[in-house]
Length: 617
Image 1 (cartoon, rainbow, N blue to C red):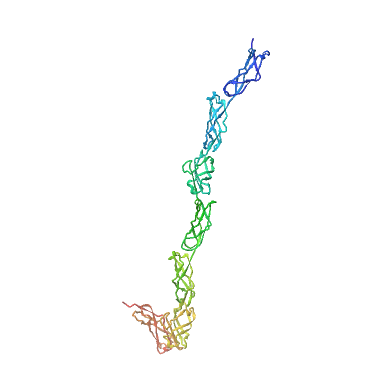
Image 2: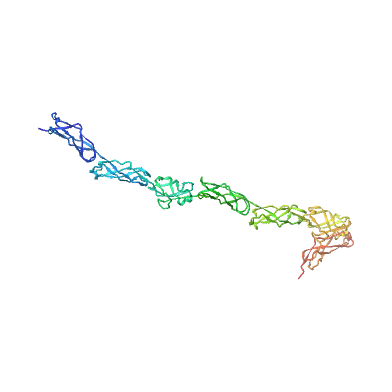
């Protein structure tokens, strides 16, 4: 008898499983088909199977190894299901004990993972699964930074596992040390704006191209030796300030520990500076005032002391002042002072007066010229003695003869320092002008009085081109014709010309001397004619100690034709001085003789001179 074949109806399923290192499969589903009714209770199906591999995988073929049991089982042959597959999924592994090392900022996200071990590896696979630790984090410095773990597994059995990454892992990134040198202008606080800086220690190609502000440890310029940077605010570049840290003390050591600050003094200016004008005193001293400091940081104690000196000691309307202000106070060391420029003030001339001067009286000369002498300057600065000279000058307020004439003083000063002074002219000065001597020879008709009307006259000594073209009357010392030869003029009344009689005086006695000392009055009877002499010449002589002189060539002028031959000229003269001279004055004492001589009056020639040469030795 042959055995009956049985089949399985329905879907035979192999259950998916998690990798466990074996190929055992769990089979379910399927019902026996072909069991005769009488054997149904006596044939039982036992399902089993194996994966064709123990490794994890999808759609792995499962070999079905079902079996029959029961009293009637031997009467049947079971046909095994085919084409059954199932999955072996990787076993989940975890990592315990993972730690991440803290690090100094290096600009990267790399984290150093240490200390982790796998949990869940089958003992048979222990040698065939290796844990490789890795992780990453943000690049920036911070505390308790979350680390993303990216562990991996390897080895011949690693494909049978799936790794669950640890979570909740943290680490610290501390700022990288950064060396810095920084220069800034004093700001009155620990926050400064850098004017220049250098950096050492930037990582990963990062840059800092600008620092908008920095916090330093000391606000004062005087503290530069121990000053250092505490923090910065970056205004340009790729670096972040929080990723770097500075040495917390001043250091000049090169490298990343370098930390030095140089604060420069803030510039102050002065506004509103004035300088007082002064009267010249020979010095450059000047009072400078009115200035106000500009640029002082609020709250700083800085005081301004103003000083200066004129650039020149000399008088001027806008003399430059060289200002030399200074500052003091608790905060003065943090500032530098720019001196004001363009400050000017006036140096006005010092007043000088004149003392102890005299004005010479003078003889009338037709001008107002006055001779002032003996004056001394009062008010000179000591250093200018010898550098300022008094030039005295002045004029009479009238050129005419008078006493107590007011002098208009016109003194001046000269010398290298004269321009620094103003001269006050003396006042109340007077002097006299006495009459000028006037030589006169007059002929008039005797009238029994001392006042005669001149028939003719000659004048010597008129000043400055003045003229006397007419005399209306003349006063003589004697009214008698017998006084001829000793008679002289005492006064005159001018009727024509530019001269004034009051400006002239005559010799107080008869004088035949030519020139301004001559004073001859000749009276004639009404019947007498006047004769003059022309062509008189005095001969040259050798000095002999006497006043004798020979005159020749004189000719009478005024004779009537009928009296020619009846009047004879007798020439005679003497020298005023016997001494050697090229213009020795000659006093003429001519006379006339003859039958008609009594009908004439002779007027003596005047202005005759002679030459007296030295006697031989």
